[in-house]
Length: 317
Image 1: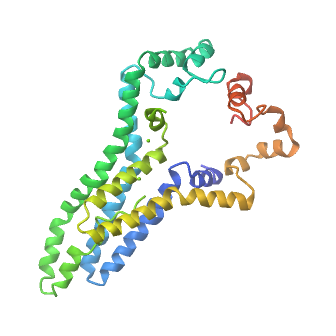
Image 2 (image 1 turned 120 degrees about the vertical axis):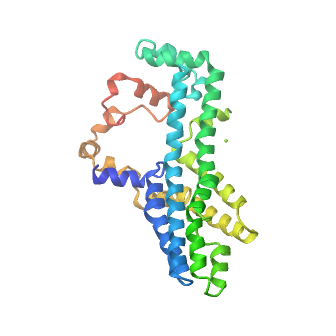
Image 3 (image 1 turned 90 degrees about the vertical axis):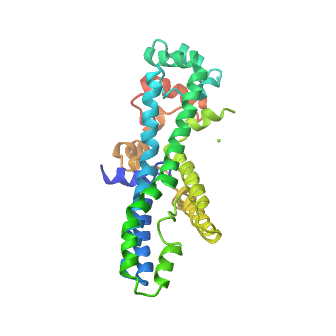
């Protein structure tokens, strides 16, 4: 992967890559370090266990948050295919737009150009209700299963893994003032405080959610779960505030910052395009204007894209 590809991926606020960098590369290591430093004031043993709990909690939750949605989605797609349907068919096609796009329009237009794709469209058309149910189930499974793992299953597993270590620490430090143990057990420390970042035809809408959209939904569900299992009102308020802040920083603020920077620089092109010498050459000599759609209207754009003679144009790429 070139530098331009890396910069493009990290800077694309519609993809999961910026979330991976912020979550796994910046946010989590910082929280682990802060957890250790905060608990070190009480004892190094407590600081170690706190940091260990934080490490296990943060990275296991991040693994489910980042990988759970695509994994469950992939399994659902396998099941949908086993029912003889193509999960890539967009339900929005059932909303016919005369002369532009729609399931009947596409079936007629592409029956000779893309017969296999048309077969998929026909199967979905014949089994629309079943297909809608399957896609709705896919969305529910892709969000609910990760939420259950992050908010309920993983915390219990992590707590159980440290129970013996905590008990041994209690015995070892029994001679110390009781405030140490009370602080360890009752203060909002590390394991229940993952500061992360959470619907026309609703099935068609959710079926077209991007991975990032689904991650935002799981984040919301995860936040609700953690707030609901908080040990007291103060902890619930604390977790609510922190999670709301992280959701804002992960899903809203980056897009605001991007818009502001685009206005300042006057450049809204992807770094990959700026690194393409052929594209820059076509822009400079004006030849790129010779092979563009008539306008940015949906009809003109679709006609241009559907025209096989335009498949190698810079605009299509």
